[in-house]
Structures are given as structure tokens and as C-alpha cells.
Image 1 (tube, rainbow, N blue to C red):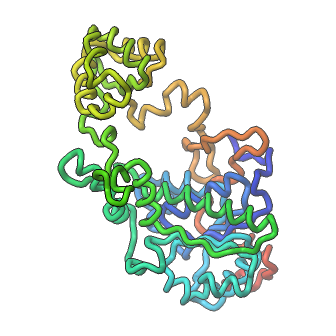
Image 2: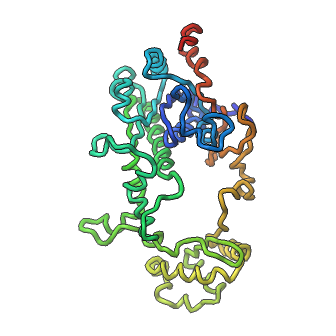
Image 3: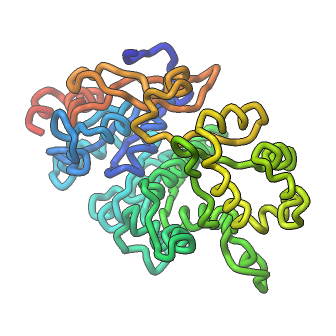
Length: 394
């Protein structure tokens, strides 16, 4: 699979100036680029240290860079210098969307805050992804994924199961906020296309992840006065886990009434059908700790293959437990080509992760491999009208 230009993409013609670092912002702008937006990533000279975490073939080109910075062009600017600031001003003047995860004070010092830019460019969509809402007392705190998992209640949810708070083994806060950034920008683009103006958008990590957690875990605390504690009991059950079977691990979830009836027969425990604590879907949810203990007890009776054959035949949600390293060889992942092997012009062959969503009219595509830091500086500045002498001086 090579870079292609078969489809212009749904966001063709939209220019996004990307002044973001780490993962939350870059992943969001990559999604916009996958849809055809012209994403111009503005980097500090020398690249970003985060993108040098091993393994790497060359500086600033690790696995995160290859997957989070595709479909972008990269320019290197020292925004504290007069010429760097002038280049940025010229670039923003051509932009539809400006995205940053810099703190408010830093943006203001550079003249890149929403008030300044939107006074000059009223149609600009100015999106800041910050740690905490700007009108709250935490506004100036530093924010990284771990800190947000802690303050948003996510780490404490793990503690309700294990006895001590734990982080999810993924940069979950960053990636969830990436999706919200994309949703917010898309909504603002539609608003502007329907006759509205540009606007300033703020995507605060703390509030975004707190709201995300509360969807199913608000529980009885949603009512005033409260009717119970926070937390969705089924997913806070310590026995809700993959189960060890005869030759491996398997996820089992006999969820519907029909699932439960055929499952009870298969394990030879038909008496469970008459037990009040398991007789209805509601009672099984209420007694999920005992229910999952039963699954834990009976799972070793069969192999992974036997469980899968039975569950597939009876439409019971089930799957073997795969390691991330196994995904590339999974028959379904291979059939849908989720992880194609690509040929990067400087990094050689690598296994990408394509956009998982399918579109029949405006598909996302690979148009550009992840660039080397500053690779397109001269190209972009020439598009802005800079002559060769000025570009060389910069």
C-alpha cells in the first residue's frame, strides 16, 4: 500500500495549522488529515523529545510519530524570533482552523490567543485543548494523561476493584480528548459553512474525562437527593475479567435471557435458571459478582476453541484474549487490512494503523507519510509568498 490521492476527502480544502505536541492534539489533527484537510504541523527547531522515545530509526520518527503525524506537512519555526513569528502570522492568515495545546499564558505571549487571532481573522476556528477549563481554579495547572486519570475519578474506579487506585494501561485521557477535539472542530466547520462565523473552542481534559466517566458511573448520585453511590456495579465487579480456560484465556458474557438459558445447559447447571438471583436480566446485573464467579468456576471445563465454537453458535459474546502483539496475525484484522505494511520514504517498511471507519463516498486515505521535522518548511513558506532569500535566512 502506497500513498494515494484517489479521493480528495470530505475535508479537502480545509487548512489546519497544528501547534500541538505529545499525543492528544496530534492524534486529533491526524484524523482531520485523514479526511483530506491540509494539516500543517508547526514544530520547534530540533523536533519534539516525545517522538524520540525508542525504538526509532531516525530522530523524532518513532511509532507514535509514524501513526500520529501522517497526512501532515511539517514546518520548523522559532516562534520567539521575529521571522518565525512573521511566518506563523502569514500561515495563520491562510488557515481555517488553528489548534494548540499550549497554555493560555504562552499563547498570549506569542500573540496566538483566540482574542488576538480572531480579531484579525473572524472566520478562524481557534481550538485550544487544555488541561482544565480556563474559568476554573485549576486553569494554570500542568496536565498530562496520568494527572487527568487521577483527578477525573478514573484511577479511583480501578481502586474500587483492586483496593488501590490505578491508571488505565493506555493514554486513555489523551485519546478520548482527541475524539472530542475532532468532534468540536467538525461542528464548528459545519456552523461556519452554514453562514456562521469562526469561533473559539476550548476542550478541557479534566471536564471531558470527568463527563466521560460519569455516563455510566453517575449511578444514584445523579439524583438530588442521591438514591445511592456512584458506580455501575457490573463493571466494578472484581470477577469481571477474562477467565482462565483449559488452554488459555477467554472473555465470556452470556448477556441476554436466551444466552443465559443455553449457557446454563451447556455447563450442566440448569438449576441456576430457577435461582431468583439469576432468573432475570435485572437480577443477574444486581448479583453480577456471584454470576461472574460462576463463569470463573466453569471456564476451565473447556478449551478456548470449544468455548468459541459454542458461543458463536449461540450468539453469546465471547472472544479469546489476544495480546497486542497478536493483532497483526488475527484473521479478521488481516482481512479488513487494519494494519497495512507501508513503505516510508526515509524509515523503510512499517506497519501502520489505518482509520477503522469505512465511508463509501468520502473514504479516509493515506496521502502523506509522517514527515521529518521541518521537512516542508521551504515548501509552505514559498506558498505563502516568501522568496528564496528570506526562506534561506529563516
